[in-house]
Image (cartoon, rainbow, N blue to C red; front, side, top):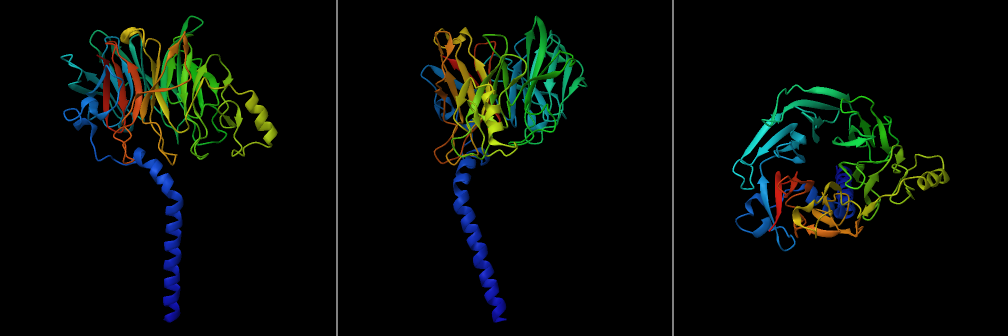
Length: 404
């Protein structure tokens, strides 16, 4: 009996020691993941009457208000040809139309137009169709432009896509190649770092508007969650989130220019500007990896590690010459970092016709001093009214930013 008691005490001591060590080494990780996962004690929808600009910090002369609320976790925003905003609510499998009936900057109507979808994300209007990118396919829905209404909620599947596993979002954008319309889709990886079994994962693909002639356009993109049309070339820009578990400051996140078919941006072998990932052991030799990185396309802009850049947009002339052509990027915010970063909107200025590589904070305040966050910005779109619209998948709202 005494011997059993000693064993029990020894076992308790070992368990306590293990928990203590785990807590010691995991404390920094807990601090880092806290704002991404934990609910804040504040509700940003209650800030409007109590605090100017919802408690967020903007440059002088700008205002922000909630355009739509109680949306769950809105992601991609798009506008139909009549200027009606649509949003994908990915986790709930929904597409919603948001109508501001009296033009007061708040959407009184939140109409569910499509439901039961598999992780819908990317949205795009083209001719008389609404295109929706789900995790495993792209469908298009006949659209009555005159009445801003989907005519057939069954839709037409134009292409199957590989399942996401780790990264399930698919984003789409239309452009033109050789004078003909094409549809691009970004497809994330199934892993943090690996060689994919399906070559379509970790790429951006291109196809005709009906889904035919589909092919890989660019590879080596771990998770290019958002893609947009380049105002310079008519080509594609992509935000790219780097791999995890290389520490607080590696690898950089990126903005990439996809200028021609066949480009390889390096993942999983390398990151940043041709840096070989020594922690990735998928190659036979370091020499092989370093040679592959020499040939990898460099990023257009390198972003602080784990900022998680998502939606981005170029400002038109709606805010005057000072902001015309500037690039605004939503930093969703880190989780794989001991000291949180991101949780803000940043600005890259146009200088003499070129985009500066130096970011400036434009909207901050989602990350709170107690280590929680009151929101996480996702997509950015410039509306036909000249305002900036920002989705937030933590606060469940869409914001509207205007210049006074």
